[in-house]
Image 1 (cartoon, rainbow, N blue to C red):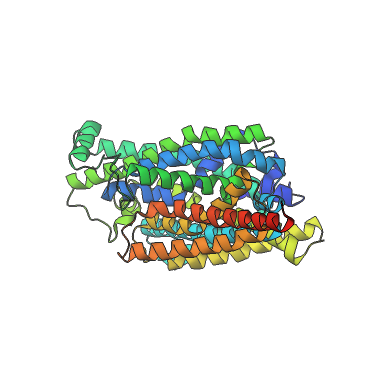
Image 2 (tube, rainbow, N blue to C red):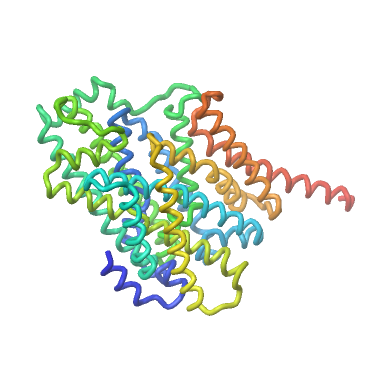
Length: 469
């Protein structure tokens, strides 16, 4: 990874090279890097945990993610290339004005810090379980390594490293599945029968129940809207799509991820199911204190040294290097250049970018340490993501689908939407509201569009009345 960082770091001359790789990254590499960014340690550890303690209903959410990619390809990406965006929040600036751009960028910074802090926690928790290290030293080590990696190499190093990571994710998953099948009495057929009898293969739930986040309708809607935010309004993911030369190549890249990432999700769900059967057949083996650590615990206590090292390497590679790049690009392009230092040299902005990498790395480390009490980290991550994600998506959709131009109306709309969704999540978590959390991001998007769009209509109507038209 550091060789990649050194090689590509020497080629950087300005912020376009640092943040977009000069738009010269091959589409295949961008596609694999996109997959690696989407998967992350949260998926590698969280998916087996979900399948181990529950079933395969998470696939419903993944279907929504797949459908969202098509909308992003043909609605979002053309706009980003039309405006030649380094940060996608520059689109909001062109479409509405500076206030909306700053707000969108700040929302992204908060969202990505929280989500990536959780990812870092999962990575360090898993690595700590495998090698026997306490949480804090592991977080500290990962933070330093990631700061050095991205601070010198920039986005091109991240993208190329991500491409290799995606390949290793698949290789490691296939080898672990092979090991589990070979150590389960009766092999794959027996394992699937045991899992089916225990209800561990249940996938679709078509009941009409707004209170259940695992129904097909709630999960797919949540996945679809989460996908629109993640792939169309989140700088970390979109940054990979903007590193290729043309709009058409970018569109092909995200569509290709449908057939490259879905098998990886399925692979790690399968690992969780096989782990369930394996431990049913081997009750003498110890289980982790918390079920969320089942996969790294299995890697440490059961897997042979070579395979254990491969799993450890995969989890290590899925660390915080990628979000550091996107956080920094959004901060420098949307905030520092516009609000703090407008007319400076590209060398100055490049230096500030590398300093910002250090600052964001330290913030991520603090958030990661605060996540340790959370049990169901995968659900919790998507719940937190929905709070600012819905408002962000609402503003982007207004810019893409309407002629709405009321710049200042967007800000209170986003703030009100965030506040409402936060209250709803608290009520859900405390048992005072019976509503599936998957609907939060849908509600947040709708509130933002209704308030901001409605404000524009009211202002326009009053203006027409005053002029007598």
